[in-house]
Image (cartoon, rainbow, N blue to C red; front, side, top):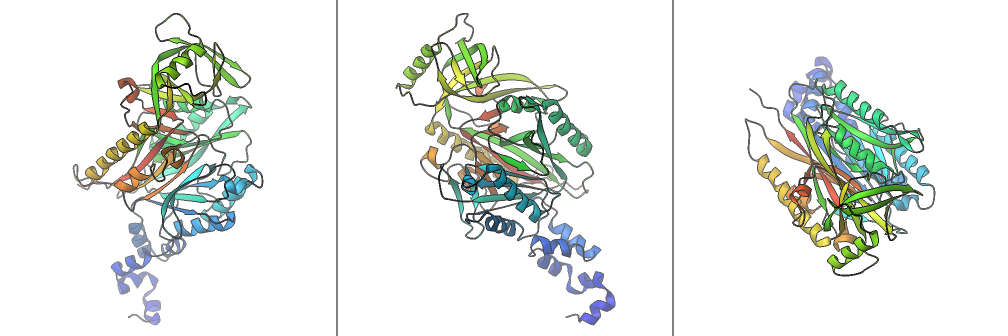
Length: 505
């Protein structure tokens, strides 16, 4: 064993030659993130070893149910930083119970402040208030799905951080010009300019969108953003929860996007991080396709009259609703119904590809002539069908998701031209949960069953956004099965993150 005098004589840089590279590697790989960062600064040779340890992407996630928000944040931060990682982004979701006794804004500000102080003010962080969390406990390591009802005593927080070498991440806000007008053009332009400056391509690799549920018209914003980006850009998120993001004092900020762009100047040894979105749903269609014959905006509601697609005569809303009830086999007036509005358009700045989107709007009520929905986004001439909650279809959809994810395992064991793909993490945004399925851990089962031991974090939301592979429904038409973008009211969006090691010639 080398003495301290020997180390001083040869210098710290020679330490690696004395203890051996393999032993140093085994030491630093066990360090917590802060100590690891210090080790990387000891010398050039130590830095080389540390860079090798963090040469692949990594996701870390942890939950805490401590009653104190400050203690809960410390629990999850300590856990995600207990291993080597350099956070490039972070997402924190807190339960409503933390904010029962005081203002939502104040509570979110406090949670966001505690997290950014722990991770660093330069890390893009999104903090939001959700309906529940999905992930592993920071102490017991138990994986669970936890949902809350209004008035529940349970407090919880989940923190997910990601290290993505070869990518750059930033947060871009969606602002409002005035209380009713979104600055959509600036939002899209800012995303494109960031992506172009980093990768040379105007569309980024992925976008995670977060927005506040209390802003009417966000469905329209999400759809326009989907058409503005290339088909290769994966888009997921929660657009229905109060949130905070890095440096957001502006009261006119109603949304924020975590934008992931490939760094064209990434080191030569770094492989490719890929994003894959898979969508499921707990809604089934009923009845024929209708067309919006008129769309009126009154008292923060949208009034829609309809006719059968291709017909010239309008049909009373009351008649249509009764026909829907007849096809469902009951007249349960409390049954929740949705309309799924289909739109088509070219996407990307070059407008070279076509995309079909489907957005769901809850039917609040109707009079004799009109249906009332509370969200803007339906236009004159849009086609739609009615949908109802269907737990059987949801289970079938989850089964289809699991089958689809198995293809990642099969692909990861095969090589294509020397490349190898490996799933290293995932996120779930879900509107279902135990209250919908009747038992817990159904939403997470496709990922957990296919990728045991791989980091997964997520949250329960009121509405989710997804653009990617859609699992088919037996009752849907081929056109609906081909949907590429959804604003979902009941369902889940799975973001799968994989890494393909660079092929060496």
